[in-house]
Image (tube, rainbow, N blue to C red; front, side):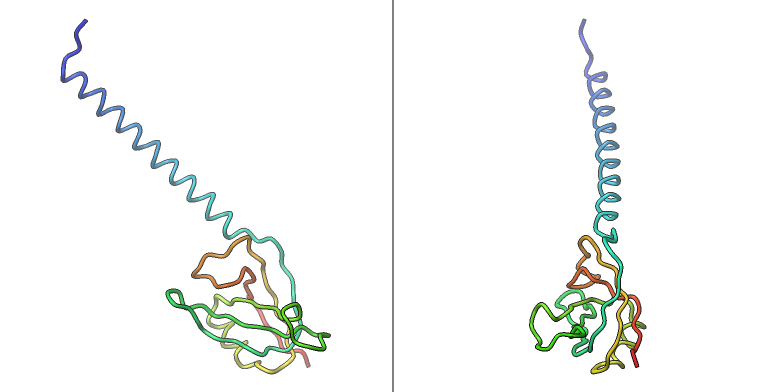
Length: 131
């Protein structure tokens, strides 16, 4: 039982073709699961306070970042400050006009935001001024 060189080449080619398809399919499935994990919403809610910082910053990915002094906090410290990201330019311009005012931010907390979404896992999608 001798196997010819052509048969061996054919089997090897078939094996590597199957291996390539398996690797490609594995990559696609892994990428889909990873994307779902990184964009999964842990919680949604609102925070109320005085907006004291909003800016566009970043070295590679320019993102909109802000800080809110939470309502009811007498002194400003790390626990009384809510840091958030905004990934919509319209919402950013709305929030920018409310700097120094008492506002309510509606946000979604992500498991782990992508770098181009922002520095924090809190994504603000709506803001309203409280009168």
